[in-house]
Amino acid sequence: MELQQMRYVLAVAETRNFTRAAEQCFVVQSALSHQVRKLEEEIGTVLFARTSRRVELTAAGEAFLPWARSSLEAADRAAAEATAAVGVVSGPLTVGLIPTVTALDVPALIRQVREAYPQVTVRLRVGASDELVSAVREGDVDLAVLGLAEGIIPEGVSHRVLAEEALVAVIPEEHRLAGRTTIDLAELAEEPFADFATGGTGRAQSDRAFRAAGLVRQVPYEAPNAELIGALVTAGLAVALLPAPFAPTQGARTLTVRGGPDRTEFLIWSAFQPSPAATAALRLLPARERPTGAPGT
Image (tube, rainbow, N blue to C red; front, side, top):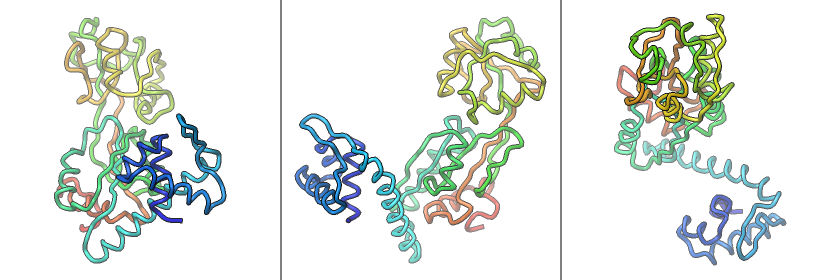
């Protein structure tokens, strides 16, 4: 079993098409098909159900896929560790992000990494904070930026605080409270809210603030991102609590909330053994942003 064969299997599984998979892997289709068939013969089972129009994973293929992916990631890590031992930083750097990052200039950091370490390949992964913590623990993500409710600390990872910020109230510009600059949390309790999904870390800050104040609010509109939440506000359908940089600039007003929710943004990385690329990226952070105890400090 060869690593390249596993790469071909992953490409076919992703594209559901042998021709597109071959294009993605920069080989001719016949060569890719031959290697996939050779792998199937070696392991003694078919990984793909094929017709002239469709390609689908078999049950065996579904079982094979996560292990193949893990094997390739381990091989990439092994190569990166070997080159790092002789002073060359290479390999993938997967950066996880919540959708509402405000405390770290992610594009600037990626540019610095690419300029300083051209053999490092940067990948981005967007997800909820709890998902990213798990991904860092499991080694699927190298660095991640989280947003957690005040007082919650990410467990099982190395971390540092990037910023602490208060969420602002975002209300339609024609709202009866639009002339105000400051508001009590209780004054918002009777308003219909737009927010992230129930139970998610993106919503935890607001839910905790209302519970702590002994207040109950209604959230008829759940949305996957801050942009849609803002659009629901500007349409006059709801109010929201968001980080100030993600509040709509037109069609809405922002108010400071007394007793409102706060969140803390963290940068996290593996507490066990950061990848060489993660270690290099941590060294590139400005002194005021470099984590205490990070490599190179």
